[in-house]
Amino acid sequence: MRFGTMFSDIVSSLLRRPITELYPVERRATPDRLRGQLHWDWEACTGCSLCAKECPAQAVDLIVIDKKAKQFAMRYHTDRCIYCAQCVVNCRFGCLEMSSDEWELASANKDPFTVYYGDEANVEAALADRAD
Amino acid sequence: MTETEKFSIPIGPQHPALKEPEHFVFSVDGEMVTSASVRLGYAHRGIEKSTENRNWAQNLYLLERICGICSHTHALTYCLGVEKLAGVEIPPRANAIRTLVAEMERVHSHLLWLGVAAHEAGFDTLFMYSWRDRETIMDLLEQLTGNRVNYSANVLGGVKFDVDEELAGAILDGLDYLEKRTYHYLDVVTTDAAFLQRTRGVGVMSAERAERLGVVGPTARASSVARDVRIDAPYAGYDEYVPNLIGHTTGDLEARFEVRIKELFESYRLIREILATIPEGELTSRMPRRIKANEAFSRVEAPRGEVFYYLRSNGSDKPDRIKVRTPTLCNMASVLTLVIGQQLADIPMILVGVDPCFSCNDRMVAINRGGRSEEVWTWERLRQYGIDYYGGSH
Ligand code: SF4
Ligand code: SF4
Image (cartoon, rainbow over all chains, first blue to last red; front, side, top):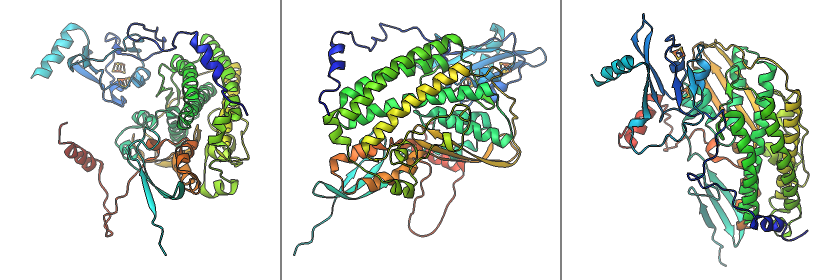
């Protein structure tokens, strides 16, 4: 039995700077696999909607603009998304990808949480549909 | 002749030693505890019922969130169960990666516990340093899986990502550091005179009592009960990577510290072994979207003990019933009997000794309003009740 078994830890720490980081002044590089905001490559999308079907958080809506011409848009809710990557796994055409550096997604109002993807005309069509 | 009155001390539900809700009532005679009771259920989230409204893939993420500390354990238990239901074999490489994440999770969980337990003993130096070192494994988990908690490593039928040379190297470096620190912590908890006063001979549980109360995990092993699902019923990669059972005979708090810390060395060994001999191959097998009517159970050794899942399918893409039992529920009875005859001040330490996780064990609450009427609420009614309760703001 001894006393002060952690004394040496304390002494060695006196000479070191704190281990905590001064976020947001200091930012550590994020690992490549970090799951941040979802991105959609609409050109490769076939509209199978498997991504939306198995999303546990109903965070992606695939909006069909013109099924025959394979025109789609996507509404993505960053606030609902739990960043699980099930959609990325489900997409057999590799249309979905999660960014490793877009992770500071907090906002003081709700608007930035709804993101539209797709080419301009399709997004406009999707937005117009919503406004009706 | 005066009759001594029973003095009851209610503790909780707000912050009963830990930052999780649970209500205890202890009767005391002076400083000594004479009886104890617990009321569970404050963090009941209706998860089991909700699974019936989600498809098999969606449930993986819901169940992963039963516990923030052993999230991989829950996801793994669920995947093993569903794969059994559907009769799907998963590739050996996926099994090895599942085992790798499971052991890394055990490392972070045991280090987290070490800190919490030290904090309850008033040994905050140990708390701070063990948590600083725990960041090593948290960073590695993040590099490997993309997230510090709720790793989302599994998919039904396999795993999402691979481990490459570079990552393996980073993990091995991290382990070298952690191993050095773990030796130090083992030395601290077994020799520090002030700390030992809080642990040695406190909350002693005999093997016989541990058996009788159905205690699981490191708490049971510290009372010489040889019980570890990884060894008794190997799953995932544990038939290849076999852990040695770490036991102890004294059954006191000190033994629980020693067992958990020594299990860390076993985890380091297993992680190294997995990285050195990981089989090549695919990461996933094909999973059907619908599963024909069947039932299955699965068991996994979580850092706290055995997690048990019962699953029933009915041919649709959603489960018919899922039942979950977490280790804290099995260990709670031991807390209630161990505190009797102990000092009031030892209660937090004895409670923490089983490494409790209250929110995980809260499954269902039966409210007895007198009379015998039994009611079953549908999910829709429960949901509406919740909306009305919070003033219909959603
Ligand atoms: S899974 Fe891929 S191809 Fe199918 S709808 Fe989603 S993004 Fe398009
Ligand atoms: S990451 Fe998960 S929650 Fe987010 S959109 Fe994809 S499937 Fe849905």
